[in-house]
Image (spheres, rainbow, N blue to C red):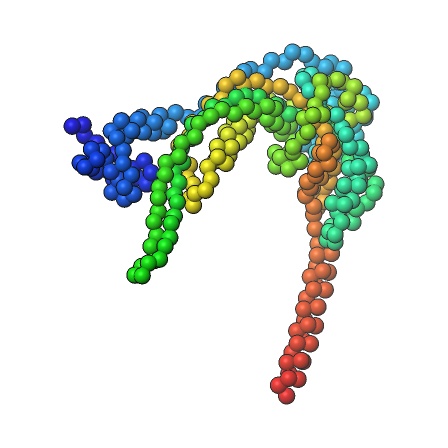
Length: 361
């Protein structure tokens, strides 16, 4: 007879013993039974899961055309390079708030495949910013100045868009718990299950921003963009706005794209498993193929301000209005608020002490 030493229950992981009555192997803990063929197949599957990593294959992105009529500005402070179509004169860096911009020069820019035109105006952005400031009493006065809000800049941020189809196999350990009480004991029964899932998913236009200046957390926060507004690129859409040249190339963007595809795949598979007390991923294998890459520009309203040598940023989706921002605290206002709060607390304490003292007299 073939030696089965080392085989464990596929559900709870406990040792298996030969069950002569059933001519099979039986778990010493949960009483599940297995044939030799099932155990061997599971062992092969586990070995494959342990030795095979997630594989994402992308086709190379080939630059088909460049735009040579654009004007490029380089910020000597943070190194950001922005481009305009000649209708905008850049005098201030939208990323670091530096006012010294180098002289413009004509430059070539990769022509995007798609663009989402600005849907919301500068006035819309200013109104959203004012609403964002509401109720923030510790905000420095400079942030609420109207002339400062006029510095809000409309920027087309470069994005790499990834399409692919994934196939995945995943296994989960799961448990169900049953409790009951009889005349003598409180009883708990734990059933262990091995769950297997497999299938395919199609991903279209998974976005990864191609600007090192734009914080990924900010871009994630103002997503999603509505792809119904995606149109073939036309240089006319850049008129009156600034465009950020992609300084994160496709190769450098692949880890981020892979992460988003794999995490979304795992999340989709996990949602098919429900009704159990515990669910623990055991193994997975995600493979993606037919991976293609496109280049697009998405609209963002951006305001960057320096306060006490620290940069604070407000960004708003120029299509949907979703916004995110970081705000400073005015130290003077903070100390005054704390002093006032301490005074109020002290006054309340005095009143309570007097009341309590009056009760016990």
